[in-house]
Image (tube, rainbow, N blue to C red; front, side, top):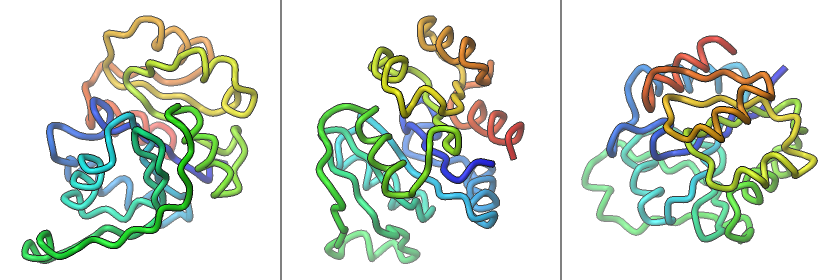
Length: 178
């Protein structure tokens, strides 16, 4: 079964700066089953960390645009804590490719492609996901997207394409898999 869920951020799990409560609840259910949950995004580190901080969800790994992969529980319950310095562990700086970050997080979690779910609305690095051996067996999901090429890749690989946008589409995919 699946041991790792990797999620893109913009257009995939967030609606603006918010993680929908029902998506957050589903992610907690998945984590309670021993599945790791990570973000693999093209968004830069500061914006990603701000989102994660606000979400209140303890992602296992965060792969940000520009390369860093971060491992830390970034959950803070007191709004005043937002102004305190944030200490994170940068596990590795792993190139600009979203697929490279996905592969590194899979390695850090000890997961093969067949044990990994990757949900993204618009992967700009399509060829990487199509060609890189270790990602060809990942289960793919796609919430509502205008990127026909990405939807074709997801469909050809037997993945799930939702007609619902952002977090609601991702929730639909996760509900079908867990």
